[in-house]
Length: 272
Image 1: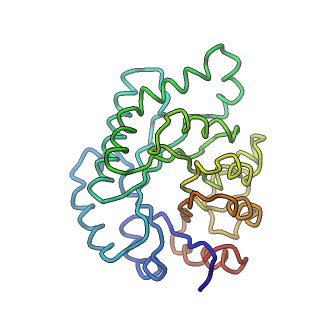
Image 2: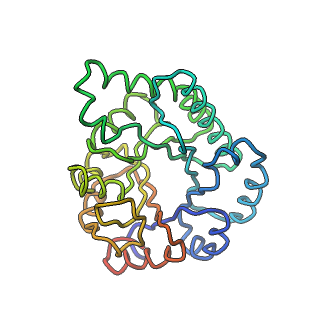
Image 3: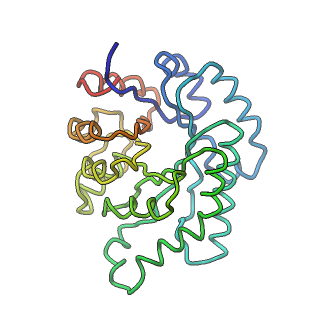
């Protein structure tokens, strides 16, 4: 039996129907992405949950969802905006509970602008953490209660350590770190961030989730693995020292290429 790590994927329920055999052949981890828009969150999402349960009958991999993120930051200074975001986080975790999902992806609050200005305005770094706590405190308690983990994904992050420190500031096993390889590679190529493997090393044992996508360092491509220029050997070398068993989730635009992405990693001797 191969000792290579087994990759999973992010997809919608429609895409799950197409890739169900691939998912089940190695009981791969799955991230469902049907629950990110306001119309779904504010509507009757139970039929989607029931459809997922039917499709996943017999699935033994780990299940998570991408949480809400469109149109907001988790570090808003406006209390009314924070209330809306807190509502969205609760809705996402309610769905996790209904699905039996144990992980929800949330987006980092750190931007390209903030990297250059957090230390320009006195107390801004601390205020950002405070705003996130005010927004997320109820969600973190809810995640603890249902046995789920909120993982903070890098978006524009240049400082690979700030998000890790933010996760640690909650002092809770229900908050951990996610890395999106394409986002990190964009930041490396376009905004002076370190390369992807540095993000992995910085996250260390806080790392519980990775979006695997290829890119060119210029934009958020979400290309199939092997179509960009990420140095995958360095990424997986850094991962080899991580014992937290993060979910390795292929997240690409062309979902028909999910199996090909896994085959590409297998051809490099990195994953299966």
